[in-house]
Length: 340
View: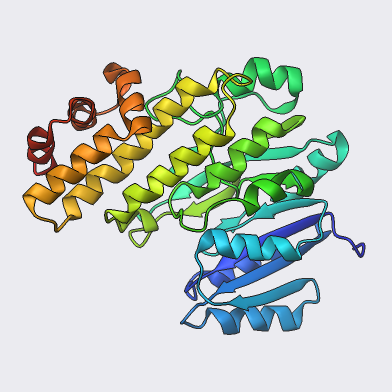
């Protein structure tokens, strides 16, 4: 392996002692060997820090850093400051990867010079596996082809169900040229804990000169009931605002006019993901929760999105009703269907 690795693999770690060794072992099993592995212990209180240290002591290409708990964006940013690779990728510490993942993706990057390489992934739940495959054909796309075939349906793929990504926002099923991902990763607000991947990934994809698609499932994402998305309070609504405001600020619609409709659909989707559990869990008085609901419906990006989306595009009767309620600020009806 060269002194400057081809690939830097960043793994944020927080209280995952049950899964951490299998995650790291799946990386050590890679057919591609020209990489460094950076483990960032984000203030874990279980056995995870010791597991990280043990691997770092055994392998000279594994580097371990410990910090006070700052959240996933903070851990990724800390890891990136130590990355030396030409390309950078990410693995979440409770997930695992196919042994051929980086052999296939790094060879594609090396042979074509692509700025980004993407693969398919599988979400593994306790009951089933959900295969998430790109709708785009395998191979290399230059800037002209990206503008014609990829960008118009990159965020929201309109030929699929609501909501189907053209390219999933995850950082973990992608390799990025280091100079491309760095500035976008480092400006992700540390306060955003849901949807933070898209702030770095989609801007990098728009800025890329070329993207290569590997049409194989190589990444395995563990989805379980302890996921962050299952813990919702009204702070999630403020995180949504930060996320939406930043996307609207950094995406230039005059340059990428096709992104406006996609963002409307994404905002509506993200709101449905968060508003429903937030208002189910909310402990505020009826008057306060009604006021909060009205404020959310009147928030300009949310208001615009829910007036732009077509209700017949929304999947599921309840989601259609929730969309109608948010569009017309019908709190009583919204609350009724939360309970039924």
